[in-house]
Length: 237
Ligand SMILES: [Zn+2]
Image: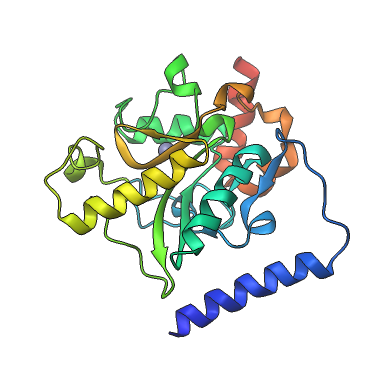
């Protein structure tokens, strides 16, 4: 109950602030925007800001996630549908600067099914363009709905993560289906290998983000090691 109250209070404060504040900023679809600032009804829980995940290291300096404005608008439509059911989206990962994608790829043992290879064209489709999210569904009490596996459960969940896996309870199957159908209805595509990953069906409209495109955001986002690495990688290209 306390969680529910807090969630409502935070959402209300953020929305209210937006109404009372200066004129709402006009964005282009290609602009990179912070989710919490622009869509407070969507929850951000950036897992790589913490260390309790399989990679066990901190990638980001703050709990904020960024997306192209065009993609965020689609997620806001998804969220509006979910709200009718008393649910909301919890975002675990969104835009990944190139140095983050490279680091995750190596930490996942170079398995391109789990973390797409940033040096191949298949790896350049989604998170590095800021058009993809890893996410789940949360109820009004702040509890995650039951899903097939925990996030990034590559070791134990390799098979269970896939959309084709069906040895699951009816409740889990229904939750996975609800997320998938709602996403598809608003122009997001699933990835067959991970139940939590969705990308904008129009991803080709957005180029891969280079360090110099948004240097201030990169400075704010990344821990120093990955910030420096991004600069280094951009010199090589
Ligand atoms: Zn993903």
